[in-house]
Length: 148
Image 1 (cartoon, rainbow, N blue to C red):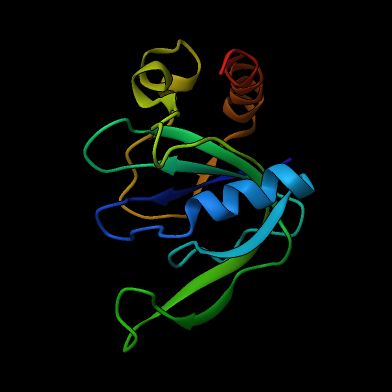
Image 2 (image 1 turned 135 degrees about the vertical axis):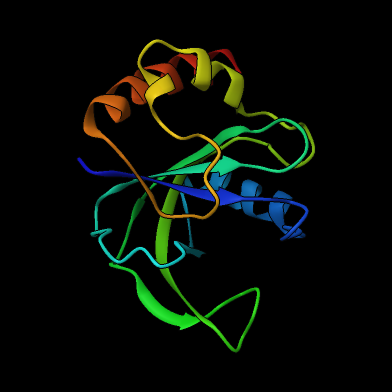
């Protein structure tokens, strides 16, 4: 299954309703919302989506879901005079990266013998994750979530 990395930087985008979204996911088992994937157009419905927290502290993966549609072009969330691609994502796992800063640490990803081959500090969302790296990330994620 193709996999993609999308990003969230709390300094650039304060996620004010994060706790509400987390509660809804925990209640329903999933939550659907739109997310930017920069200029990436190759994501397909059903593709795995990983959510990476970037910024100052506690960088790492804290969300897992799947694409519900292919990306569509629309106004940029940062600059409405520019365009960006975004897609609907069904999130099935979100860790509390907002208040608890609970994430699968970027340092672990960069030091892992298989995962280290991926860029875990992308400049934008919508970065492709190769199949072999995604398969290993799935294993590492399951183990991490069980311990969290």
